[in-house]
Image: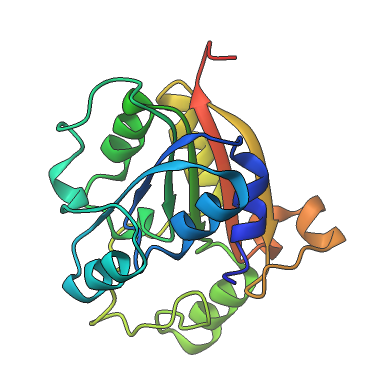
Length: 200
């Protein structure tokens, strides 16, 4: 089981209607369907992943997230999830706004470029960092908008989005006292639960 599933499962209500953006092979939707009796869809652009979703009986639509979510009505989902894809989107501020237009809540996970190992790698080697959470070279990476936790939280504030919950972990999805005290320095990955200001 993917390690972030346990955290995400705790944030999703039973029988919620879920949309998973960039759903991959559908394992998250499978897990939520089994553990929480959820319904919903995944959006995916990779043909092999779409085939895996079909084999797993996961509802999947072929769609490029960079083209937006205009084909979905307002508040048509209880929760919209996007794991490890925010940094690959051309306009992340727009996808966040769209997520909370069509969903009551959003769950977002992404790697922290401000993690101390990334800072040290860049400072000491003078090259773009590579790690478990950032495994690609600068020239073949799908990541086009790397950010820190502070960057993301500032963006949420500017867009009138409220952070309901946050979990900061290392590359193995473990937490520590250091991460709780200085998350932007010691956290490798974050999971955020967000909604619009004013939503209960």
